[in-house]
Length: 485
Image (cartoon, rainbow, N blue to C red; front, top):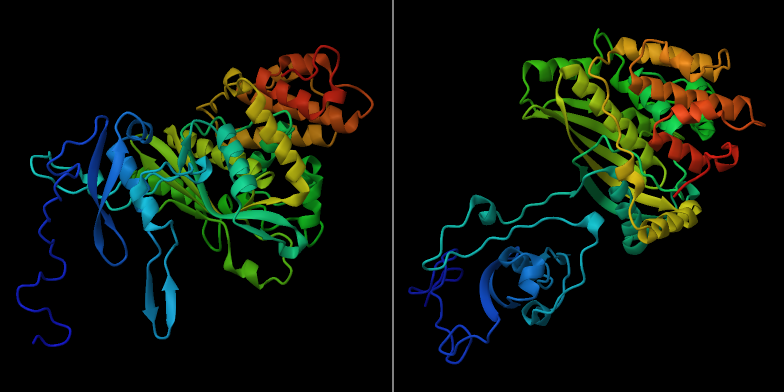
Protein backbone atom coordinates (compact mmCIF):
# COMPACT_ATOMS: atom_id res chain seq x y z
CA UNK A 1 0.00 0.00 0.00
CA UNK A 2 1.55 3.29 -0.96
CA UNK A 3 2.50 5.74 1.76
CA UNK A 4 0.27 8.72 2.30
CA UNK A 5 1.01 11.60 -0.06
CA UNK A 6 2.75 9.38 -2.63
CA UNK A 7 1.31 7.88 -5.78
CA UNK A 8 1.15 4.16 -6.29
CA UNK A 9 3.50 2.74 -8.87
CA UNK A 10 2.08 2.95 -12.33
CA UNK A 11 0.19 6.15 -11.66
CA UNK A 12 1.27 9.15 -13.69
CA UNK A 13 3.50 11.59 -11.83
CA UNK A 14 2.19 15.04 -11.04
CA UNK A 15 2.85 17.49 -13.86
CA UNK A 16 3.10 14.84 -16.58
CA UNK A 17 0.45 14.81 -19.27
CA UNK A 18 -1.84 11.79 -19.16
CA UNK A 19 -2.21 9.66 -22.23
CA UNK A 20 -5.11 10.91 -24.31
CA UNK A 21 -8.14 8.63 -24.13
CA UNK A 22 -9.56 7.48 -27.46
CA UNK A 23 -12.72 9.35 -28.41
CA UNK A 24 -15.98 7.39 -27.99
CA UNK A 25 -17.38 5.86 -31.15
CA UNK A 26 -19.77 8.14 -33.00
CA UNK A 27 -18.38 11.36 -31.55
CA UNK A 28 -17.35 14.18 -33.89
CA UNK A 29 -13.72 13.43 -33.07
CA UNK A 30 -14.19 9.65 -33.38
CA UNK A 31 -15.55 7.43 -36.10
CA UNK A 32 -18.44 9.57 -37.33
CA UNK A 33 -17.61 12.67 -39.38
CA UNK A 34 -18.35 16.07 -37.86
CA UNK A 35 -21.46 17.89 -39.14
CA UNK A 36 -20.84 20.18 -42.08
CA UNK A 37 -19.75 23.67 -41.11
CA UNK A 38 -18.86 22.71 -37.52
CA UNK A 39 -15.80 21.33 -35.82
CA UNK A 40 -14.68 20.53 -32.30
CA UNK A 41 -11.39 22.03 -31.19
CA UNK A 42 -9.61 20.74 -28.05
CA UNK A 43 -7.65 23.29 -26.00
CA UNK A 44 -5.74 23.25 -22.74
CA UNK A 45 -7.31 25.69 -20.28
CA UNK A 46 -5.20 26.44 -17.21
CA UNK A 47 -6.87 27.12 -13.84
CA UNK A 48 -4.91 27.98 -10.67
CA UNK A 49 -4.74 24.26 -9.86
CA UNK A 50 -4.78 22.09 -12.94
CA UNK A 51 -4.88 21.95 -16.69
CA UNK A 52 -8.11 20.70 -18.22
CA UNK A 53 -8.90 19.91 -21.80
CA UNK A 54 -11.99 21.68 -23.14
CA UNK A 55 -13.65 20.54 -26.33
CA UNK A 56 -15.53 23.54 -27.65
CA UNK A 57 -17.96 23.31 -30.59
CA UNK A 58 -17.30 26.16 -33.00
CA UNK A 59 -19.32 27.14 -36.03
CA UNK A 60 -16.70 27.68 -38.74
CA UNK A 61 -19.00 29.92 -40.75
CA UNK A 62 -20.25 31.98 -37.83
CA UNK A 63 -18.77 32.35 -34.35
CA UNK A 64 -15.25 31.34 -35.37
CA UNK A 65 -15.05 34.03 -38.05
CA UNK A 66 -16.61 36.74 -35.92
CA UNK A 67 -14.38 36.13 -32.92
CA UNK A 68 -11.16 35.69 -34.82
CA UNK A 69 -10.64 31.93 -34.95
CA UNK A 70 -8.99 29.53 -32.55
CA UNK A 71 -7.52 32.07 -30.13
CA UNK A 72 -10.91 33.72 -29.70
CA UNK A 73 -12.53 30.38 -28.91
CA UNK A 74 -9.92 29.77 -26.23
CA UNK A 75 -10.52 33.21 -24.77
CA UNK A 76 -14.23 32.50 -24.51
CA UNK A 77 -13.66 29.15 -22.86
CA UNK A 78 -11.02 30.35 -20.39
CA UNK A 79 -13.13 33.35 -19.39
CA UNK A 80 -16.02 31.09 -18.40
CA UNK A 81 -14.29 28.59 -16.11
CA UNK A 82 -16.15 28.00 -12.82
CA UNK A 83 -15.01 29.41 -9.50
CA UNK A 84 -12.03 27.66 -7.90
CA UNK A 85 -11.51 27.77 -4.13
CA UNK A 86 -8.76 26.70 -1.80
CA UNK A 87 -8.90 26.41 1.96
CA UNK A 88 -6.43 28.46 3.99
CA UNK A 89 -6.28 27.92 7.76
CA UNK A 90 -9.97 27.83 8.39
CA UNK A 91 -10.84 30.42 5.76
CA UNK A 92 -11.28 30.32 2.02
CA UNK A 93 -9.90 32.32 -0.85
CA UNK A 94 -12.29 32.68 -3.79
CA UNK A 95 -10.96 33.16 -7.27
CA UNK A 96 -13.04 35.17 -9.69
CA UNK A 97 -16.42 33.52 -10.22
CA UNK A 98 -17.47 32.74 -13.77
CA UNK A 99 -20.33 30.91 -15.41
CA UNK A 100 -21.11 27.25 -14.83
CA UNK A 101 -19.25 24.46 -16.67
CA UNK A 102 -22.33 23.87 -18.79
CA UNK A 103 -21.91 27.29 -20.37
CA UNK A 104 -18.26 26.58 -21.07
CA UNK A 105 -19.13 23.62 -23.21
CA UNK A 106 -22.31 24.99 -24.72
CA UNK A 107 -20.58 27.22 -27.25
CA UNK A 108 -23.31 29.84 -26.91
CA UNK A 109 -22.19 33.40 -27.70
CA UNK A 110 -21.47 35.50 -24.62
CA UNK A 111 -22.17 39.22 -24.11
CA UNK A 112 -19.43 41.41 -25.62
CA UNK A 113 -16.81 42.91 -23.33
CA UNK A 114 -17.18 46.71 -23.03
CA UNK A 115 -14.70 48.39 -25.36
CA UNK A 116 -13.10 50.56 -22.71
CA UNK A 117 -12.21 47.52 -20.56
CA UNK A 118 -11.34 45.14 -23.39
CA UNK A 119 -8.10 43.17 -23.11
CA UNK A 120 -6.36 41.07 -25.68
CA UNK A 121 -5.65 37.51 -24.53
CA UNK A 122 -3.66 34.77 -26.22
CA UNK A 123 -4.16 31.25 -24.80
CA UNK A 124 -1.80 28.30 -24.69
CA UNK A 125 -2.66 25.90 -27.50
CA UNK A 126 -1.92 22.16 -27.53
CA UNK A 127 0.53 20.64 -29.96
CA UNK A 128 -1.29 18.16 -32.19
CA UNK A 129 0.24 15.54 -34.41
CA UNK A 130 1.08 16.98 -37.79
CA UNK A 131 0.42 20.57 -36.70
CA UNK A 132 2.93 23.34 -37.28
CA UNK A 133 4.79 24.59 -34.19
CA UNK A 134 2.91 27.38 -32.48
CA UNK A 135 4.47 30.84 -32.30
CA UNK A 136 6.02 32.25 -29.16
CA UNK A 137 3.07 34.61 -28.75
CA UNK A 138 0.52 31.79 -28.84
CA UNK A 139 2.52 29.88 -26.20
CA UNK A 140 2.00 32.69 -23.70
CA UNK A 141 -0.60 31.82 -21.09
CA UNK A 142 -1.91 35.37 -20.82
CA UNK A 143 -1.17 38.64 -22.63
CA UNK A 144 -2.87 41.87 -21.52
CA UNK A 145 -2.97 45.20 -23.34
CA UNK A 146 -5.14 48.34 -23.15
CA UNK A 147 -7.62 49.23 -25.86
CA UNK A 148 -6.02 51.18 -28.72
CA UNK A 149 -7.48 54.30 -30.34
CA UNK A 150 -6.21 56.61 -33.10
CA UNK A 151 -7.14 59.71 -31.10
CA UNK A 152 -8.61 60.76 -27.77
CA UNK A 153 -12.22 61.46 -28.75
CA UNK A 154 -13.39 57.87 -29.17
CA UNK A 155 -11.42 56.75 -26.11
CA UNK A 156 -13.16 59.49 -24.11
CA UNK A 157 -16.61 58.43 -25.31
CA UNK A 158 -15.91 54.75 -24.61
CA UNK A 159 -14.62 55.43 -21.10
CA UNK A 160 -17.70 57.52 -20.28
CA UNK A 161 -20.03 54.88 -21.69
CA UNK A 162 -18.31 52.08 -19.81
CA UNK A 163 -18.58 53.82 -16.45
CA UNK A 164 -22.21 54.77 -17.05
CA UNK A 165 -23.29 51.26 -18.10
CA UNK A 166 -20.86 48.98 -16.27
CA UNK A 167 -19.64 50.85 -13.19
CA UNK A 168 -18.46 48.59 -10.41
CA UNK A 169 -19.16 50.77 -7.39
CA UNK A 170 -21.34 53.63 -6.16
CA UNK A 171 -19.64 55.70 -3.48
CA UNK A 172 -19.33 59.25 -2.16
CA UNK A 173 -15.78 60.12 -1.05
CA UNK A 174 -15.79 63.47 0.77
CA UNK A 175 -19.49 63.74 -0.06
CA UNK A 176 -19.08 63.57 -3.85
CA UNK A 177 -21.48 60.88 -5.06
CA UNK A 178 -20.05 59.04 -8.06
CA UNK A 179 -19.95 55.90 -10.17
CA UNK A 180 -16.58 54.15 -10.22
CA UNK A 181 -14.55 51.53 -12.11
CA UNK A 182 -11.13 50.36 -10.99
CA UNK A 183 -8.15 49.91 -13.26
CA UNK A 184 -9.10 51.35 -16.67
CA UNK A 185 -6.51 51.89 -19.41
CA UNK A 186 -6.32 52.98 -23.03
CA UNK A 187 -3.64 53.78 -25.60
CA UNK A 188 -3.55 56.52 -28.26
CA UNK A 189 -1.56 55.89 -31.43
CA UNK A 190 -2.09 59.53 -32.44
CA UNK A 191 -1.76 61.52 -29.19
CA UNK A 192 -1.67 64.78 -31.13
CA UNK A 193 -5.45 64.37 -31.65
CA UNK A 194 -5.98 65.31 -28.03
CA UNK A 195 -9.35 67.09 -28.00
CA UNK A 196 -12.92 65.76 -28.38
CA UNK A 197 -15.13 67.74 -30.76
CA UNK A 198 -18.42 67.19 -28.94
CA UNK A 199 -20.90 70.05 -28.82
CA UNK A 200 -22.48 68.75 -25.61
CA UNK A 201 -19.11 68.74 -23.82
CA UNK A 202 -18.34 72.43 -24.59
CA UNK A 203 -14.54 72.14 -24.53
CA UNK A 204 -12.58 75.28 -23.63
CA UNK A 205 -9.45 75.22 -25.85
CA UNK A 206 -7.97 78.38 -24.32
CA UNK A 207 -7.90 76.77 -20.89
CA UNK A 208 -6.28 73.57 -22.12
CA UNK A 209 -3.43 75.39 -23.86
CA UNK A 210 -2.98 77.66 -20.86
CA UNK A 211 -2.82 74.73 -18.42
CA UNK A 212 -0.29 72.84 -20.56
CA UNK A 213 1.94 75.96 -20.78
CA UNK A 214 1.48 76.55 -17.03
CA UNK A 215 2.82 73.03 -16.43
CA UNK A 216 5.75 73.33 -18.85
CA UNK A 217 6.75 76.62 -17.21
CA UNK A 218 6.87 74.85 -13.82
CA UNK A 219 4.37 77.23 -12.25
CA UNK A 220 2.00 76.79 -9.30
CA UNK A 221 0.44 80.26 -9.04
CA UNK A 222 -3.30 80.87 -9.07
CA UNK A 223 -2.99 84.22 -10.84
CA UNK A 224 -2.63 82.56 -14.23
CA UNK A 225 -4.55 79.31 -14.00
CA UNK A 226 -7.58 80.60 -12.05
CA UNK A 227 -8.22 83.13 -14.83
CA UNK A 228 -9.04 80.19 -17.10
CA UNK A 229 -10.44 77.83 -14.41
CA UNK A 230 -11.86 79.85 -11.48
CA UNK A 231 -12.88 76.66 -9.64
CA UNK A 232 -9.23 75.91 -8.94
CA UNK A 233 -9.27 78.64 -6.28
CA UNK A 234 -11.12 76.22 -4.02
CA UNK A 235 -8.13 73.84 -4.21
CA UNK A 236 -5.71 76.37 -2.74
CA UNK A 237 -4.80 76.31 0.95
CA UNK A 238 -3.13 79.74 0.95
CA UNK A 239 -5.21 81.57 -1.66
CA UNK A 240 -2.18 82.18 -3.87
CA UNK A 241 -0.85 78.79 -5.01
CA UNK A 242 -1.92 75.21 -5.63
CA UNK A 243 0.24 72.25 -4.78
CA UNK A 244 -1.13 68.88 -5.84
CA UNK A 245 -2.60 70.03 -9.15
CA UNK A 246 0.52 71.96 -10.15
CA UNK A 247 2.13 68.94 -11.78
CA UNK A 248 4.59 71.04 -13.73
CA UNK A 249 6.16 72.50 -10.58
CA UNK A 250 7.33 68.98 -9.67
CA UNK A 251 8.51 68.07 -13.17
CA UNK A 252 10.11 71.24 -14.53
CA UNK A 253 11.77 72.69 -11.41
CA UNK A 254 14.99 71.43 -9.76
CA UNK A 255 14.52 69.28 -6.67
CA UNK A 256 16.65 69.84 -3.58
CA UNK A 257 20.26 70.64 -4.36
CA UNK A 258 20.02 69.47 -7.97
CA UNK A 259 20.69 72.15 -10.57
CA UNK A 260 18.55 70.40 -13.22
CA UNK A 261 14.85 69.65 -13.18
CA UNK A 262 13.60 66.03 -13.31
CA UNK A 263 12.45 66.75 -16.86
CA UNK A 264 15.95 67.86 -17.92
CA UNK A 265 17.47 64.86 -16.14
CA UNK A 266 15.23 62.49 -18.05
CA UNK A 267 15.98 64.18 -21.37
CA UNK A 268 19.70 63.88 -20.66
CA UNK A 269 19.28 60.21 -19.77
CA UNK A 270 17.30 59.40 -22.91
CA UNK A 271 19.71 61.34 -25.10
CA UNK A 272 22.63 59.27 -23.86
CA UNK A 273 20.80 55.93 -23.53
CA UNK A 274 17.76 55.80 -25.82
CA UNK A 275 16.79 52.26 -24.74
CA UNK A 276 16.61 53.21 -21.07
CA UNK A 277 13.56 52.31 -18.98
CA UNK A 278 14.44 54.82 -16.27
CA UNK A 279 12.87 57.94 -17.76
CA UNK A 280 10.30 58.34 -14.98
CA UNK A 281 8.92 61.70 -13.87
CA UNK A 282 7.39 61.23 -10.36
CA UNK A 283 4.52 63.55 -9.45
CA UNK A 284 2.68 62.16 -6.42
CA UNK A 285 4.50 62.66 -3.13
CA UNK A 286 3.92 60.56 -0.02
CA UNK A 287 3.95 63.66 2.16
CA UNK A 288 0.62 64.67 0.63
CA UNK A 289 -1.03 61.91 2.68
CA UNK A 290 0.09 63.60 5.90
CA UNK A 291 -2.02 66.71 5.20
CA UNK A 292 -5.37 66.32 6.92
CA UNK A 293 -8.34 67.17 4.67
CA UNK A 294 -5.98 67.95 1.79
CA UNK A 295 -8.15 69.75 -0.82
CA UNK A 296 -5.62 69.29 -3.61
CA UNK A 297 -3.91 65.89 -3.61
CA UNK A 298 -2.15 64.95 -6.84
CA UNK A 299 -4.28 62.77 -9.10
CA UNK A 300 -1.29 62.00 -11.32
CA UNK A 301 1.29 59.53 -10.00
CA UNK A 302 4.00 59.65 -12.67
CA UNK A 303 4.81 60.12 -16.34
CA UNK A 304 7.12 57.59 -17.98
CA UNK A 305 9.04 58.53 -21.14
CA UNK A 306 10.43 55.76 -23.35
CA UNK A 307 12.30 56.04 -26.64
CA UNK A 308 11.62 53.18 -29.03
CA UNK A 309 12.47 53.01 -32.74
CA UNK A 310 12.99 56.74 -33.10
CA UNK A 311 9.79 57.80 -31.34
CA UNK A 312 9.07 59.06 -27.85
CA UNK A 313 6.30 57.18 -26.06
CA UNK A 314 4.65 58.15 -22.79
CA UNK A 315 2.90 56.03 -20.16
CA UNK A 316 0.86 57.97 -17.60
CA UNK A 317 -0.22 56.51 -14.24
CA UNK A 318 -3.13 58.20 -12.48
CA UNK A 319 -4.21 57.68 -8.89
CA UNK A 320 -7.69 58.80 -9.85
CA UNK A 321 -9.48 60.55 -12.71
CA UNK A 322 -12.79 62.33 -12.92
CA UNK A 323 -13.45 61.03 -16.40
CA UNK A 324 -15.76 63.85 -17.45
CA UNK A 325 -13.54 66.71 -16.31
CA UNK A 326 -10.02 65.77 -15.24
CA UNK A 327 -9.43 63.07 -17.86
CA UNK A 328 -9.90 65.51 -20.73
CA UNK A 329 -7.56 68.10 -19.22
CA UNK A 330 -4.90 65.58 -18.18
CA UNK A 331 -4.68 63.85 -21.56
CA UNK A 332 -4.38 67.21 -23.33
CA UNK A 333 -1.61 68.51 -21.06
CA UNK A 334 0.35 65.28 -20.77
CA UNK A 335 0.37 64.65 -24.52
CA UNK A 336 1.52 68.25 -24.97
CA UNK A 337 4.38 67.56 -22.53
CA UNK A 338 5.14 64.36 -24.45
CA UNK A 339 5.28 66.24 -27.75
CA UNK A 340 7.38 69.01 -26.22
CA UNK A 341 9.86 66.41 -24.94
CA UNK A 342 9.95 64.70 -28.35
CA UNK A 343 10.77 68.03 -29.99
CA UNK A 344 13.62 68.66 -27.52
CA UNK A 345 15.06 65.23 -28.30
CA UNK A 346 14.52 65.50 -32.06
CA UNK A 347 12.27 62.41 -32.07
CA UNK A 348 8.94 61.49 -33.59
CA UNK A 349 5.78 61.37 -31.51
CA UNK A 350 5.00 57.85 -30.31
CA UNK A 351 2.04 56.37 -28.46
CA UNK A 352 0.43 57.64 -25.27
CA UNK A 353 -0.91 55.16 -22.70
CA UNK A 354 -3.17 56.25 -19.83
CA UNK A 355 -3.70 54.04 -16.74
CA UNK A 356 -6.31 55.02 -14.13
CA UNK A 357 -6.61 53.50 -10.66
CA UNK A 358 -10.03 54.97 -9.81
CA UNK A 359 -11.98 56.04 -12.90
CA UNK A 360 -15.12 57.80 -11.75
CA UNK A 361 -17.97 60.07 -12.83
CA UNK A 362 -19.62 62.46 -10.41
CA UNK A 363 -23.39 62.44 -10.21
CA UNK A 364 -23.31 66.21 -10.65
CA UNK A 365 -22.07 65.69 -14.24
CA UNK A 366 -24.23 62.70 -15.11
CA UNK A 367 -26.78 64.59 -17.22
CA UNK A 368 -24.06 66.20 -19.32
CA UNK A 369 -22.36 62.84 -19.80
CA UNK A 370 -25.64 61.37 -21.03
CA UNK A 371 -25.94 64.19 -23.57
CA UNK A 372 -22.36 63.59 -24.74
CA UNK A 373 -23.03 59.88 -25.22
CA UNK A 374 -26.28 60.56 -27.07
CA UNK A 375 -24.53 63.00 -29.41
CA UNK A 376 -21.69 60.58 -30.10
CA UNK A 377 -24.16 57.79 -30.88
CA UNK A 378 -26.44 59.83 -33.16
CA UNK A 379 -24.08 61.84 -35.32
CA UNK A 380 -23.16 60.29 -38.69
CA UNK A 381 -19.44 61.05 -38.37
CA UNK A 382 -17.33 62.91 -35.80
CA UNK A 383 -15.89 66.28 -36.91
CA UNK A 384 -12.44 65.30 -35.59
CA UNK A 385 -11.31 64.17 -39.04
CA UNK A 386 -12.05 67.66 -40.40
CA UNK A 387 -9.87 69.32 -37.75
CA UNK A 388 -6.45 67.65 -37.67
CA UNK A 389 -4.23 68.97 -34.90
CA UNK A 390 -1.01 70.57 -36.21
CA UNK A 391 2.40 69.34 -34.99
CA UNK A 392 4.41 71.40 -32.54
CA UNK A 393 7.19 73.30 -34.39
CA UNK A 394 10.56 71.57 -34.36
CA UNK A 395 12.29 74.76 -33.20
CA UNK A 396 10.22 75.06 -29.99
CA UNK A 397 12.48 75.73 -26.99
CA UNK A 398 12.00 76.82 -23.38
CA UNK A 399 12.52 80.38 -24.62
CA UNK A 400 9.58 79.91 -27.02
CA UNK A 401 7.39 78.91 -24.09
CA UNK A 402 8.56 81.93 -22.08
CA UNK A 403 7.82 84.28 -25.00
CA UNK A 404 4.31 82.90 -25.48
CA UNK A 405 3.61 83.19 -21.75
CA UNK A 406 4.82 86.78 -21.74
CA UNK A 407 2.20 87.67 -24.35
CA UNK A 408 -0.37 85.57 -22.48
CA UNK A 409 0.15 87.60 -19.32
CA UNK A 410 -0.25 90.88 -21.19
CA UNK A 411 -3.53 89.67 -22.68
CA UNK A 412 -4.78 88.12 -19.44
CA UNK A 413 -4.22 91.35 -17.51
CA UNK A 414 -5.78 93.36 -20.36
CA UNK A 415 -2.63 95.39 -20.94
CA UNK A 416 -2.75 94.86 -24.70
CA UNK A 417 -5.22 94.02 -27.43
CA UNK A 418 -3.86 92.02 -30.35
CA UNK A 419 -5.30 91.99 -33.82
CA UNK A 420 -4.36 89.04 -36.05
CA UNK A 421 -1.87 91.23 -37.90
CA UNK A 422 -0.20 92.14 -34.59
CA UNK A 423 0.17 88.47 -33.68
CA UNK A 424 1.52 87.62 -37.13
CA UNK A 425 4.28 90.20 -36.60
CA UNK A 426 5.53 88.76 -33.28
CA UNK A 427 7.99 86.40 -34.94
CA UNK A 428 6.30 83.22 -33.71
CA UNK A 429 5.50 80.11 -35.69
CA UNK A 430 1.85 79.78 -36.92
CA UNK A 431 1.29 77.07 -34.28
CA UNK A 432 1.94 79.52 -31.45
CA UNK A 433 0.13 82.32 -33.27
CA UNK A 434 -3.01 80.18 -33.06
CA UNK A 435 -2.52 79.83 -29.30
CA UNK A 436 -2.25 83.61 -28.90
CA UNK A 437 -5.38 84.09 -31.01
CA UNK A 438 -7.20 81.85 -28.53
CA UNK A 439 -5.84 83.93 -25.64
CA UNK A 440 -7.00 87.13 -27.38
CA UNK A 441 -10.47 85.62 -27.82
CA UNK A 442 -10.46 84.74 -24.12
CA UNK A 443 -9.43 88.32 -23.27
CA UNK A 444 -12.44 89.64 -25.18
CA UNK A 445 -14.78 87.14 -23.50
CA UNK A 446 -13.58 88.18 -20.02
CA UNK A 447 -12.83 91.89 -20.35
CA UNK A 448 -15.46 92.86 -22.94
CA UNK A 449 -18.50 90.92 -21.65
CA UNK A 450 -21.08 92.97 -23.57
CA UNK A 451 -19.51 92.51 -27.00
CA UNK A 452 -19.20 89.53 -29.33
CA UNK A 453 -15.76 88.19 -30.15
CA UNK A 454 -14.33 90.10 -33.08
CA UNK A 455 -14.79 88.54 -36.49
CA UNK A 456 -11.21 89.01 -37.64
CA UNK A 457 -9.92 87.02 -34.66
CA UNK A 458 -12.34 84.16 -35.30
CA UNK A 459 -11.64 84.20 -39.03
CA UNK A 460 -7.90 83.88 -38.37
CA UNK A 461 -8.33 80.83 -36.17
CA UNK A 462 -8.05 77.34 -37.61
CA UNK A 463 -11.36 75.56 -38.13
CA UNK A 464 -10.96 73.28 -35.11
CA UNK A 465 -10.42 75.93 -32.40
CA UNK A 466 -13.08 78.13 -34.01
CA UNK A 467 -15.58 75.22 -33.86
CA UNK A 468 -14.81 74.69 -30.17
CA UNK A 469 -15.19 78.39 -29.29
CA UNK A 470 -18.51 78.59 -31.11
CA UNK A 471 -19.93 75.66 -29.16
CA UNK A 472 -18.49 76.81 -25.85
CA UNK A 473 -19.76 80.41 -26.09
CA UNK A 474 -22.50 80.43 -28.75
CA UNK A 475 -24.08 83.63 -27.43
CA UNK A 476 -20.80 85.53 -27.84
CA UNK A 477 -20.28 84.62 -31.49
CA UNK A 478 -20.94 87.27 -34.17
CA UNK A 479 -23.33 86.62 -37.03
CA UNK A 480 -21.94 84.00 -39.37
CA UNK A 481 -19.72 82.36 -36.74
CA UNK A 482 -22.32 80.48 -34.73
CA UNK A 483 -22.20 76.76 -33.87
CA UNK A 484 -22.19 74.41 -36.84
CA UNK A 485 -22.59 70.66 -36.41
